Length: 123
Image (tube, rainbow, N blue to C red; front, side, top):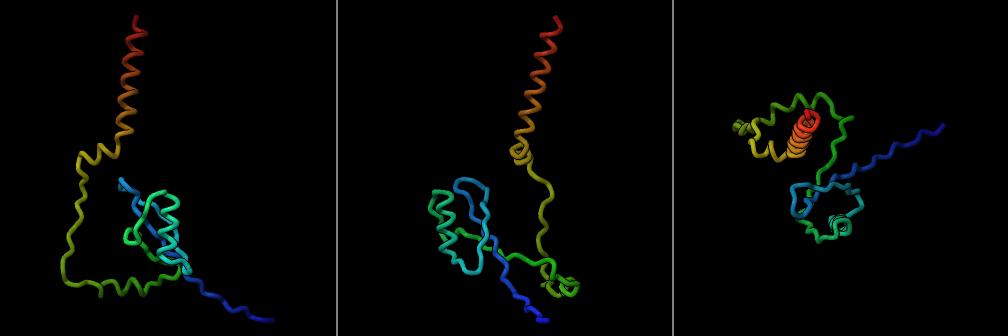
């Protein structure tokens, strides 16, 4: 009985590129044999817009199945002694309105429709 040797494959890297004129970022995967120029060309073909290599944000995927408790025990060693600023928990009102503009419009239409229906059927 032969034992097969387990092959180690490199995990793909997730690549992000911002969409022109928006805050949305498009995501794709880069495999080990692909260069940054090939990925740039791929995004340029998809978006029909010239993308610069500097715009690509490449992040390595973390294999969470291999994470052990030893990594958690080393976390306090990473403390540099400097306080890191806390992120504010409150979202500005203007941003909340911008994120929920669809729901606000739907509620306004529903209230308007209810008012018109009430007026029409009250006669």
